[in-house]
Length: 124
Image (cartoon, rainbow, N blue to C red; front, top):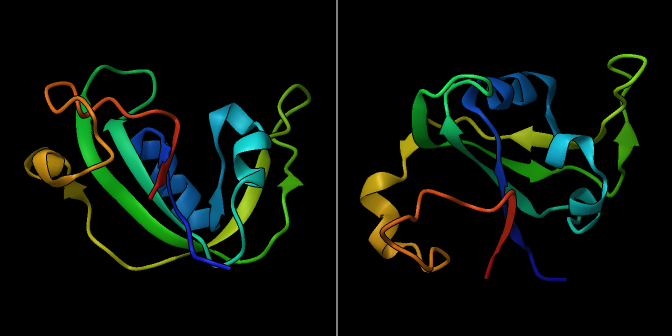
């Protein structure tokens, strides 16, 4: 089976927390995007913002990891929030600005507004 590469969009503060926990979580905890991933696929986190509730921009790739297994599980955060997650083995890497890379990234169709990525992109 071929290896796929996925981009998950999340604020940088959420990404750093996910890295510490060794997990991926998408679309406010929805399972559907996680079900598309397979063991040994790679994920790249892209952060358009520094913090989810603040306007400060980031525009960086903020984490890179490998999907550990084929298990999706729910994690109880609060009585009304039980997001789906996957286990990820994150690689040690530095944050990287997307801005100088936009013209070379084939999956970005609109180069002018290229820093607006979908929540989950599949890299071909």
